[in-house]
Length: 128
Image (cartoon, rainbow, N blue to C red):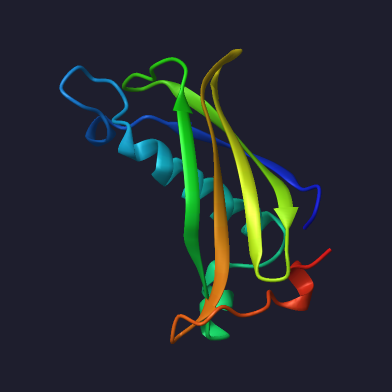
């Protein structure tokens, strides 16, 4: 999983916009989650499998910098990259792009926990 980069296309839906038909700022974080989930799927695993094993990934830190707006019906590309993998956490970096324009950049750190919320080691298949 280390050094992994994954891209998905996302079309801005009307319900994701504000009164000016601009992508609402909260939806950028939803897009970041879509990037993490689809990256995992592309690597042959699903988050469902992770949960069925009694593990969960919780966001412990996030950042998002907005550089330019996205509008209703824009076709965007989200690039998700693994920046760092620790024993119990993964840091991802994101770029949301329209054409050649970077609209937003961000990071998240997710931590592996069990059903009681105690930090657990990542499964071996996720470690470098």
